[in-house]
Length: 627
Image (cartoon, rainbow, N blue to C red; front, side, top):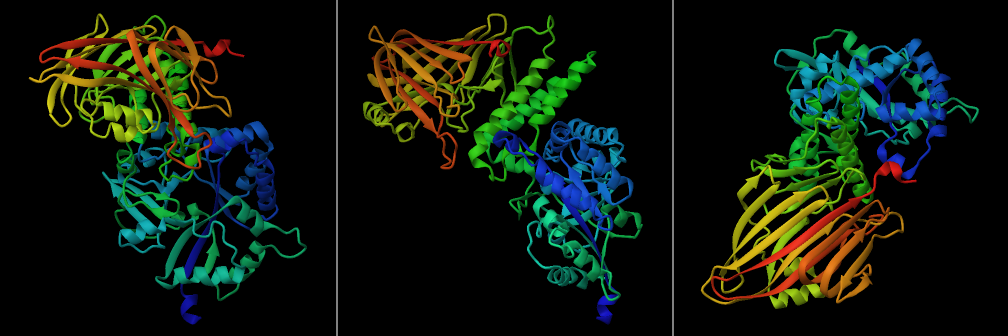
């Protein structure tokens, strides 16, 4: 015990108060839970606590119970609690652009100061998502230290329970070890004390921030049973002369002005209480559909930064962009799989709201442009209209994003990299039969066109036309076939012309198929309606697989009835309509979208070609007119 008395361990209890998007989806009400926590903490003035608020939590209590701000102010004023800084909508701060990071931190700081709280000196990192490059940005916002998971220290070969002094470009920031290990602990005060003493047994001065869940904190502070609370018993134990533990705030650790260990901590994050041992951006790159959201975010960021001369417009668009940057929306920890579609739709909705606000009336004009939208080194093509965006990728020559501004939704987002609009296939009769049975994926396992890089032959910005071309080999005989594909964009959609040519010396007998996938998932129990005009009659397609002959048009109305899609052919086609199912078993609604397969039988002699034409139209009602 004499040896332990020379050692010291500073403990900071902390609670992260959040009300996230999923809580909004599920309409949770935590008013009583937080009332219990703040009242219990207020009634224990001798217990120091560190508090972290998300911006959504502050917005939520402003709506539900503004009196919480007064209680927090009293505890803050008597120096019982310290409030850390945060990026307002809790993004992966190592992922978003510097100006957005600084903007979100300053927005949080301004919000806290409106309630008379002091400017934070410490920073909380959501998911402990760390990258050394953010250090200068944090310091620019007045931050002196941040919280890092103690396992980062171990990985860097540092003392896991001693603060670290980090440097980047001559800027200094301290990192304080933290842990969620005891978030839901049921240890008794004596056992908890003994366990923490193990952290103090390595060096003479150690520190750690212990995060507790709100429920655990309430249980520790509860005095309702007529006896001492867990915290009071713990406080008695650490107040004894032989104790090596003291309670403090995070800021007090840095105020002591000790000389701490120097070190470099590489990019890392914590998901589901596990080290990812990688940067967040690498995790994004490993998931194509998540990376598509990130690319859209970067694109909208560039649009917002181009707004000049209208401060209110820029501020409003920035807020919508920041909402879309929230880390939970990217679901990298896979904790909320059943909400995956809702999270993505929420992200796209806010990105489109931000993009819409950057379009200044009288200045915005219809356009067809090319740029590397998805940051893969290959230019994509973007058709921008007042109410409709379409993004075309050279890989497969398909439309991979279709934004309808009246609904603020991307109707090409089906959480699967194999989907899109106007995806081209050339298949055999056997493969067609496989599709008719509902097995689409295995039938197109050996694609002729859809995995090719299409060459842009003609790009007309005035006529809003894009002509692309590719070649492929058809099946066992390796018959060479070429495909020319021309997009002609208009205010209501697009016209796509196909010219398929047999370049081989043999006759070609196959089926040319065009795949059009639409993200029209059910809302609660209401399904999208699909009407088909075939063989001079109108039919209503069922939820399962459907096959129609001599199809003139297909009309799809989303469940809310706001958006109607119409697909027409210049000549009668056959059509198979299949549901696209969620790959996640626990998904709320199993159907993600509808796959429309238009196909024609083609018999071409050597050197001959055939033309097919599809018209795609979007009729969208303005959201403001909906009840």
